[in-house]
Image (cartoon, rainbow, N blue to C red; front, side, top):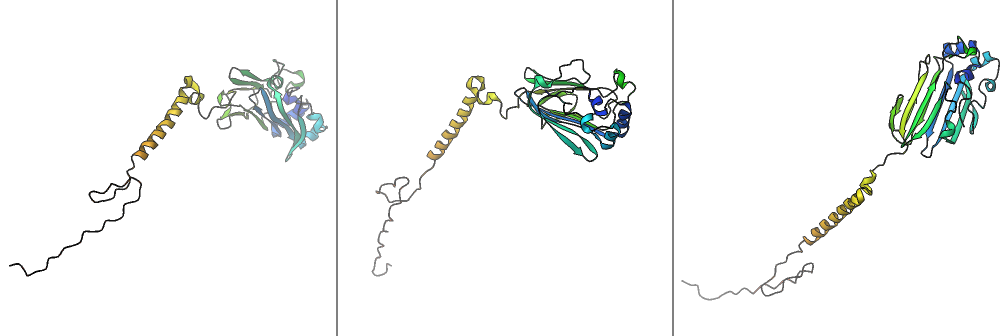
Length: 269
C-alpha cells in the first residue's frame, strides 16, 4: 500500500516553521506523482519527493531523516533522487490494488482515492499544503513555490476532469502553482480502451454486422464473375462455308486467294 503516512508538507519540512518559510520563499522542492490505472483494478507508478540541498542543510539532518523510506508506505522500491540542487527519494510501485492504494483515513487532508464505479474509474483527492489546524504548524505559510504535479492515466478515454486532459494518452494532470488553498482533484475515465471498430459492426445486432460483411464479399465475387463472362474472345474473319473459330482458340490458317483470270484477245471496239 502506498499512501502518505503524514501530510506531505510536514514530511518535506521536518515540522519546523523556519524551513517551511524558506521553502515557501525559494520554491526549492518537487512533489510529483504519476499513476497508471490498469484495467484489472491495479495501479503502477512513481512518486518523487525532493528538496533543495541548502534546505536539507538547515534541517541539520540527512535526507533519510526528512524523507524516510516509508514516506509512502507499502510494497515497492525506493531509490535516491537527484536533479541539480534537488535531493530526495523516488518511489516506484507496480500491480498495487486500487483498494490498497487509496487512502483509508477519510478525514485526512491529503486524501486520495481511486474507485471502480460501473465502467469507469473515479479519482478524487485533496492536496492541502496549507498550515491547517495542526498546532505544530500554526502560523506556517503555505508552500506556494516549487513544483507540484500529479498525473493519472486511465485505461480508456477521460470522461470528465478538473485538471488538464490529454486525450491521446487518456491522462489528467494537475500542476497547481497556487497552494495557498487546498487543491481538489477529480477525474473520471473509462475502464477499457475504445474499440477501433464498434463491436456491433463485427458481431452485434443479432449477426447483422457479420451479414453485412458477408454481403460485401459476395457482391465482389459476383461482379468478378460477370466481368469475366462479359469478355468476348477475339473475332477472326473467315470464308463462307468454314466453321467459325472457337473462342480462345488459335485463328484458322489463312485461305488462299482465288486466282485472277485475265482475258487475252483483240481489243473490244
